[in-house]
Amino acid sequence: MTFGPLVQVAGAAYIHPTAQIYGDVAIGAGSSVWINVAMRAESFAIKIGAHTNIQDFAMLHVGAATPTIIGDHCSITHHCTIHGCSIGDNCLVGINTTIMDGAVIGENSIVAGGAFVREGTVVPPNSIVMGVPAQVTKTRNNWIANRMNAFLYEQNAEAYARGEHRAWSDPAGQAAMNQKMESLRDEFASLFGEQS
Figure 1 (spheres, helix red, strand yellow):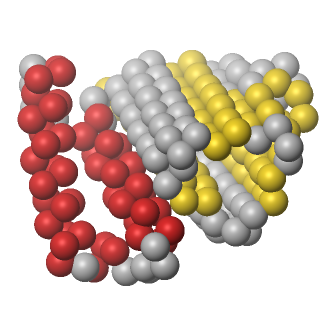
Figure 2 (cartoon, one colour; figure 1 turned 90 degrees about the horizontal axis):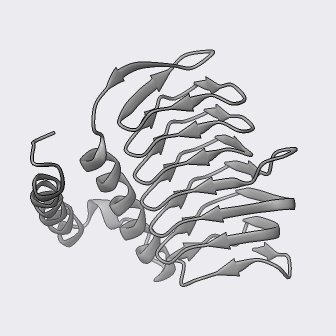
């Protein structure tokens, strides 16, 4: 991995050696940065919360007038472009999505693969967003699904850090997934008083 001198990493689960990270970048505890990710923050900052995964070939950059802020328990999936926007906690951004300057994605949302979120778009919490240009197509609290995806990547990151590359097929890993799903359902009910 190549880090600039300003990069701050607070107990990340795993950062792949091919990651290229420069400028004012902060990565939270339990987060992971995967193969061939590029991050640059020559002005403003890139802030990545805790337990968030930035997957293979994603590109994060600051906007002309805006930082890039990604919350806790998020998944930024393969080949995404995240450019000077704000993404709330517990969000999943699908493969090959672009989110542009000044856009705001509310917590517990899913941005479907291939979406293009235009500059300044504001997506309310608990949304499903898709299309080019992206639009809200459904309102649903995606907390459980998005938390589970973030957990799976943190589990995988910890395995990669140990040199293990098949965590998701391991019976112990499967048991941990099932246990986590049960705890997430209980936590969801206590937080929101409903079932997803």
